[in-house]
Amino acid sequence: MFGSSRKNIGVIGLGIIGRAVSAHLRQKGFQVFVWNRTPRPVPNFVGSPAEVAELCDFLQIFVSDDKALLETVERLSEKLRSRHVVIAHSTVAPDSMRAAAEIVERRGARFVEAPFTGSKVAAEKGELVYYVGGSDEALRDARPILEASGKQIIEIGVIGRATAIKIATNMVTAASVQAAAEALALVRALGLPFDSFVEAMQGNASYSTTLAMKVPKMIEHDFGPHFSVKHMLKDMEIANQLGLSHHLDLGVAAVARDQLLEQLQSGHGDEDYSAVARKYLPDIHWRTQGESQTAAPEAQRDAGSVAPASASTPSLAGLEEPGPTQENGDSRTGDIAVSTSPNRELKETTQLRRGFLSQLLRRGRRLLKQPVSKE
Image (cartoon, rainbow, N blue to C red; front, side, top):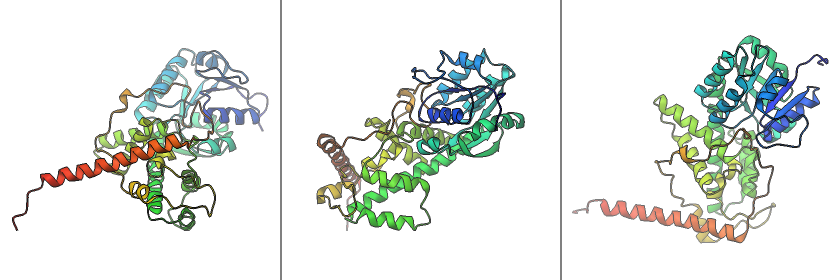
């Protein structure tokens, strides 16, 4: 156990993860000071990031994106001294993480990158897995802080590498959930019971902790945020940009990005990223085993005939940038129940049918452009 001589910890960003990490630090006996763009009624809430730096030697940053991370370290920079260790937990582009490190290190402070895997449930249990990068000295000093909320710390190497690994792992996560959504659509279109699919998957080599968590919630239409659409979309955008910069065709990551973008544009950006299932399962009501899972034939045809995503994806540049209060979870919403009102269901079903008709029109145009056979 640590004695009373342990140093103060500052947490910047009180979203789902930041709140949970703060609680674990306090439980382990650390003195914790916090700041959030939107004031919160929590112990030791201070007035600015600079004030956190004045009070604390270790600074954990839980913000959502590249812009927020760089703005935060800039606001801290004037107060940073050699005693400080700045631990950045954001999932951002590797270049952004390196730029943040440079700002911190110019002031003589030390920098650790520590993106993590594990969302709301893992954070609440203190079971995050941190991917870390930085100097040996900085990692040694940061380890007790990370152990307070994590079950594993994986050292990756120099700054930027841990962030790249986190993006790569999220590519697999997003693709798995997207594939599961499409599989559920096929199961439903064929009139098969979801229980049989779930049981079959549990014995399948591709089954994972992610699918164990997400598939039942997709069937239930429970999209309370554990890791939001907008944050996974940001990560898939980074993945595709990295792919382009290295001349890689990341087709699966591009599809995952497009489907997440569609959900964001439909107003579901704050929901869990498993909300991609909305496109394929727009009117599910089944809550318990044995209930009827037979949909109207027309709805089944619609669910099985969704037009593919466009190869031309709108730029994210015009989207609202999340502020410094947001991080890899969701900063402003808790576990919420998603409305399944008849009006919403009717709207979603109508949108799906329009997509089906658009596909038929496109096929018709292609047929008209083909030359007529002379046989």
